[in-house]
Length: 279
Image (spheres, rainbow, N blue to C red):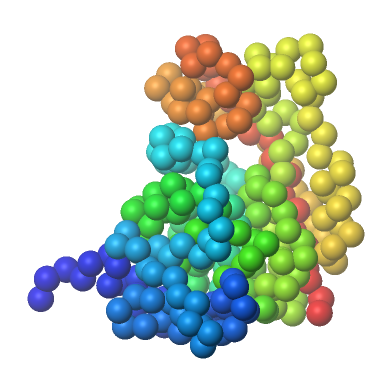
């Protein structure tokens, strides 16, 4: 027998976990057909693409993030720059989580690396509004569910996830609360004051944007979740020369700069917020 195609493998995997899905148009439960349609009883149907992802967008969206940006992000992630952060996130995910959703997952690198740190098998799902990001995720990371979609019209059933990741991405607390199981946890990662300070210093010298505070974000998080834990992770790593333009492309901060600036090290300064939902 020949190798199963990426689409066929994704159909089987999504079929196995179809109870996670809810129609983004009418909120009815969904079924995955043998020929790769994800459809509800009202005949709203979404196709699993040949690359192995499903597009649940119900209105057109033009992403400001290009395929090239996600390729750059992939290279930076593979360099190990965020590995200490990913290990700490995995620690907070813990051994009790069976279903994990990464919201704003981009090209899927964070989710993949965090899952690889866990001791147990999990059902891992990534959603992003950018089709280019999800296409890249589906290309590189199998045995996961990748969805193009908008959290404002979420394609998932309520109380489907033990853990939601929200890494350097906008939050939708109402939707997070709906999607988390009782005692489920949200892990949100936000920048701290020295995050990418070497780029910030050159992009916004002598302006208020040179310095960053996340106080409002942290307060808002605490309003929505109980038993909040906070952990700050700060380190500076050497940066290989060929990664500099890649890093500048993947972060909006870098869009303000010439691509040939000199950077020989970079500071990662992030805060991990972990909160529990109680229904």
